[in-house]
Length: 362
Image 1 (tube, one colour):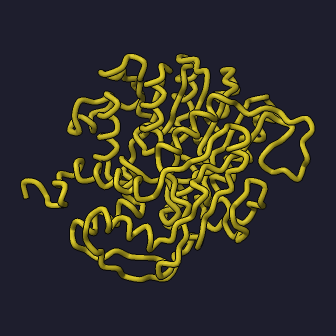
Image 2: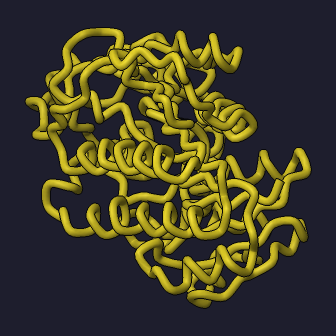
Image 3: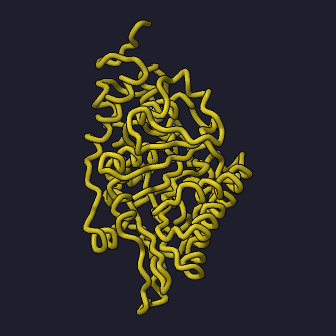
């Protein structure tokens, strides 16, 4: 297939693009490479895919120009804002995609408290542009990143895709819930197969610098205290990146179908070709146990600053993945210590530490 993957300078998108290329798909990647977090990590992901030769060249990526990977002719990349409707439309007209996987978004729950406008532009306006471009260019296979944050004030665990998600507690979560509603509308009106993926706390190599694992590892290596919110009482269904990518690929290969015998109590399906899945490890981990796994790998104790829960955060996440297993024969299963070990190994190499955590060349 020829697949548009948005967010390919991002964490999940970069991993997905490489996996799709490895199996022979043609991939066009899209990202605006914004400065929400360390752009060197984003440039590193693009370098890994052969889009650029070195980190120093990253800032020279021209806007709106389709570049071909130096490693794989099946991989192209364009620096573009999703809200740039004219250029997004032209990209669809020129490239004629078989499928779209939208992983680009303004991420972050806490950032949405202080920068709400960026979520509306990228996550709502940009998402609409992709749906419209798909509609007018006969793209019937559309998958996209939603989030476990849509469960909001719901306290019934594990979270099921048939639970009510009408009470988000951050604008980020509201934008993701909006994506699901918009997708259903386009499935119903235009017959586009849309599948939303509610990701649960994704972690692993090349991860986001604003996420807990990255922040904790960085602080530990710099001998600084870490802020532990909700006094360490958080429960998170941490899900390893390879498990997430496998789930995404299975969704791309199995577009949503209409359900003519749909029971209207089932929120995750519809009479339209629409579906929503949880992708989580189905095994929530206490935040303190997560930190202990980092300490085990680094061989050191991390000093902790215990803090109250932050606005927009939920105390626990836990994914019910029964429909993922039933429909796609898949369940994430990477153990937390294995996943953290892999992340720390990557972090040490990327940021210039030896295996004992000592900075190389000062």
